[in-house]
Length: 152
Image (tube, rainbow, N blue to C red):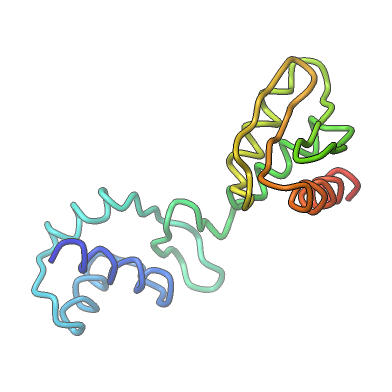
């Protein structure tokens, strides 16, 4: 029951402008969940919901990675990658990224966080990173995407 309730809360937060715990309690009751304000308070903590400013609305609950007033996780990771990498090339199924001194780990961590399909793993040095993918075709495609990030 808790899992289903959490899924419903996530759905409501994504699709409605939920501004208070009382509103969330009412919405859940309308959806058939018999909940108390104390239960909702615990659910909000467990789901790590946050209050964020909403244009022309005041404040509303959002999921941690969906704050409207900040960049998304992917945008931040892309920014880290963009600021640390100055070259990308590939050979067979290995992509080599050239970074500013001491930023190889940051660039590889950013790639890991962006969760591109086909990546087997990354390995970072001081000013170089390796991205191992499953095929040469995937290496070519990902290399082009990563070049697009640093050329923007």
